[in-house]
Structures are given as structure tokens and as C-alpha cells.
Image (cartoon, rainbow, N blue to C red; front, side, top):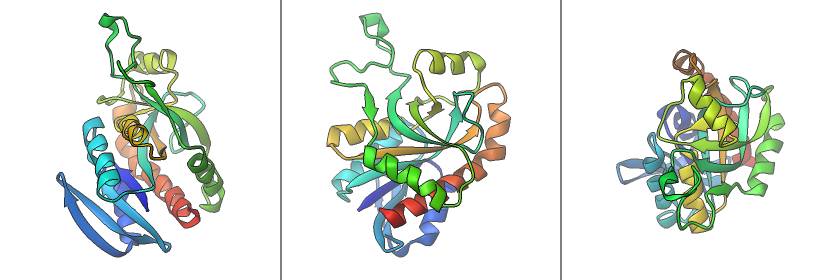
Amino acid sequence: MLGIIGAMEVEVESLKAMMDDAQVIQKAGMDFYRGTISGKEVVVVKSGIGKVNAAICSQILVDVFQVRAIINTGVAGSLNTEIKICDIVVSTEALEHDMDVSPLGYEKGVIPDMPVSCYPADEALRELAKNSVKAAGLEIGVFDGRVVSGDQFIATPEKKDELRGFFKGDCAEMEGASVAHTAYLNEVPYLIIRAISDQADGKAEMDYPTFEKKAAENSVKLLVEMIRAY
């Protein structure tokens, strides 16, 4: 069974509408829709915004539904000048950019007592995602990239420069790395798919509501093809 997490309703409503034999199980204030899409068993859930919500959601998928893999879909701000609005980033890895224990001698982003702080995505899921782009009929740019996550909406050039320069991020959002962190601890394959809604700069607060829906639609089209081929 495949677990699919979106942070907002716009990211999951289309998937729920496609489900057959859907059952709704409520846990931790979240509605987990269990059913089939293209004959494949899936659980689709809106986690809510932020790292804590996404981590709780991921752990429930593992413990209650015993998913074989987790895909986190949604939108993000681009940190890479080559990645434009409505392009898609397929995660190579993810880290939490707002983890900062530097006063104790750790580099920013490093989580003390963890063997790693940057979590690699599953290679098979990455290849499936990239191979599904053409089949989904998406005429957009698709990029491998590092996802950096924090409980912050990135909307200033200064912060964007930090996330790109220091953390080498390709896109910034608020959930993916906590999904990756949870998947890593549970030894469950994961992938983050992010459609770009803004450039994470001074125009972000204007661009985001304009392009959010279109960016989410691209994610859904890709995800449906991935489910079919999974």
C-alpha cells in the first residue's frame, strides 16, 4: 500500500475524488482516505501545514496502515534560478533548514545524535516519478533537487540566498524533510514531489496564490501516473 501526503486540501482533493471504495479513518485530527486508484491500494491524507503535522501523519501511515512507501506531494518555492514556476522538483534528499544547534558547535541543519541529517530519497521512486512525467502529458521542466524544509514561508531574497548558498537547496517548503526524517527512522522508502508555486523571493506572497492551484494540478497529474505504474 502506498501512502500519499499533501499539506493542503488543494493537493489531495483531486486524488480523493478518483478513489474507489474509499473508507475514511480519523487519527490525530486527520482524515485518512483508504481505497484504490487505478486498482492500486493507497491511503491519501492531508497532513496540515508544518513539520510537526507532517511527521505525525507519516508515523500514522507507518504504524496504522503499514504503508510500503510514502510520497509527499505539494508545492514549494524555487531556490534555483533554473527551476521556474510550475516546474517540478523530484527530491534527491531533504533536510530541515531551521534546525540550528550551532551555539553548541554543530553546523546549521545538523540534528545532534542522529547518524544523518540529510535524508536520501528512494531511487526507485525517483525513477518512477521521472518516467511518469511524459506519460502524464506534462510539458514542464522536471528537476532532481534537494528539498529544504522549515516552519517558515520563504519570501525574502536574503533568506532565499541563505537556503541556496549554505544549504544548497533547490526548493523550500514546510513539510518534506519531516516526512523524510520519519521515513528514515522507520526504514520506509519515501519521495517528495514539489511543483513550484513561487520564486521564494519578494514576490512570493503575490505569486503563491496565483500559481498554487496550477502547480498542485501538475503534482496530481504526475502522481496519478505514478500510482498507475507502481
